[in-house]
Length: 246
Length: 386
Image (cartoon, rainbow over all chains, first blue to last red; front, side):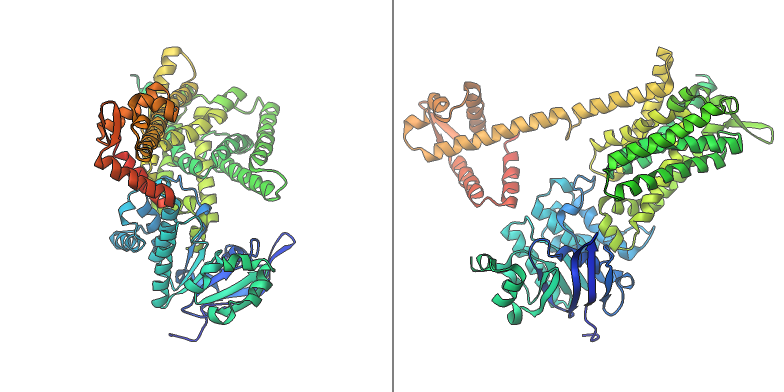
């Protein structure tokens, strides 16, 4: 550990659309080097939490610190994998080009990506098993392949923190395994990963850290300590067992 | 060709190129109709600018009018953000209001303003060469050629400088924001360039037809390529082609040049829409027919695999058993035979080892029903093409 600062520290964060609070007084500390799931029912504010960390949504109260500083000063330390549906896949471009977009942040304005950026992007494509699709028009990729392209794009950002909004959505079992293996590798390399996750069954297998969220923060900590009936009930109500015991 | 003819075509071509560049991004951002709003609502800006400068080609007038265009965008977005009306309604509310202010201004000051409503709507390219630019007493060409040339040059320079940023923020606004490229700045930058271009083109092609020059070349190019750079180049080429072909069509028919240009663009789009190799109506139709054939083939092979008794596999009974028309049964049978998937002896069809293997594999894909597996199956199917 370079320093003792947590990867992300959130204090008293409140976000509201119009009058309706979506996140209510959230306090959250994410230590460096964890692979963390954010779980909670629909409308719990999981995506909103990620977007607030990135400053895409302005909170009405509270603060977010990335390694002790506001996000704006740490832009290059954070990579974001949005939901697949957030972009138009009919855009005229190919897989490799989308991955290269991840390098734009380190280039800054005007400067064009060159050989170095291309090489890094090809490596990222190889890591997610998509090298053979590098010249494929993006609308010709399946949902799982599109998700891997997004992951590759985040990899080339070479960040310390990865924020992912449902990377397993609409993805088959093979792709899910491939993605989780990459995430585990990243954690081994000391990265911090925060993943919005829906499938409660796989939480203990995939993640070592978990945050329960339902508008308010319910609990956050090591999976083996806090992933239990008590917290699940508080987050999901009494029906959660259907999801877990299946 | 007289020099006047050359000049008109040159102006028309530059106008078309200048419109096609921002047009490509507007089409990709699903904001094509904002160009309609801008082209109409700049009218009061042009009239007011004319009162001040008394010169339709003055840079000040162009900037004033372009500012009206940007204000239009701001107003549309403001109304939209209230959530009370949808985007298209907001556009429909703003631009007619501004346009009609311009119309009233012209009507009230008809004697002072060298503008009439016809020219506002349709433009008049034919007169463009008569307004000359002189430097130190020497004639250096039509004013509007210089105006639109300058605008095009600025537009191309900005495009080259900020291509990466424009591409990123058009494809993924969220990522652009998190990487520190303000989508807001890029959005209003694009809106400013669009407004300036439309003002520059206004004189030549008018408020209504300029929309076609912005949207049609980009929309046509979009059907032909999967590469943003190629799309930009193609859009410019289509624009230039429409300018030259439109000019000669107007010459032949003794009609409006702008009208003819737009007609050429319309025809061009329609032809590409029908015949584009990947996304054209015809190729989509043939591809879908091919796919239906492939699915039928699979059904047929599965049927052969499922049934061992010869009655079920008799060539003539195919129609009864899987309820197919004669033609369809014949096509599928031929396809299977041609690809060496079945053999027929004594009118009884049976799978070859290759057919057996393929059917097994297809069956496995179907039962696991995985998204990527289906992709692979499709690739396998392509083997049967042709």
